[in-house]
Image (cartoon, rainbow, N blue to C red; front, side):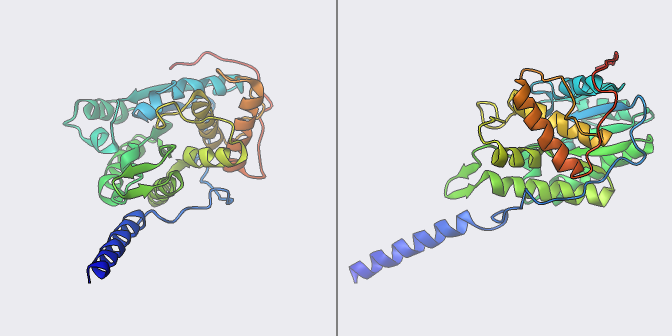
Length: 287
């Protein structure tokens, strides 16, 4: 009897552990699958005004600055600005009672922006409660952008490199990135907004070039290579042009940068990769 009790107890513990490791988010997306991504409507103009809105995933390694350097080197003109605050979510940015939210409202409403790039807090974006904690605030911000004649672009970021472990509950990078991707895809589809699939770029790069480290030592923020890959993905989405002829490499070696350029181009543009005939020239822009 005593032995039977112990076996029963062990079986119950194992069942509980199995239950914690499954559930929502346990299925993973095929990150290598070809997808069609919405292109800007209207197409990017000759000197677009672009505002980046986000948190440390945006300002770490100066993502907007990396993007504008690519834009310049590819021979385009643009005015790029950033409004980012550590740990911020779209909920805080949508709250006009919040100091930074009020600043965003003042910055966007009544002003001319061609694109406003919105980046959600990763914890919110990769949660199963995005319908309550992400979508309503994305709708509020999207309405402000559209009322000013601009286009909303959602920047899908990347999940933690090592996944998340909380007690018996374990979620891998692939599981978390799948949830995040689905959440971003759902809200961008609903609002007919642009989606910048930087997180999927990370997953593709990991498979094709596992030697390239895309995360900073903390496992959450991007390394210089990760920031460069995200910037290339933004460029391909906004300009509908391959960054593969860009000779701005940031802190990276040329070979590594070329690999990242190719990842972004193939993901966003697929087989119809457009190249710029003006690559290499530069122009003064604001940041």
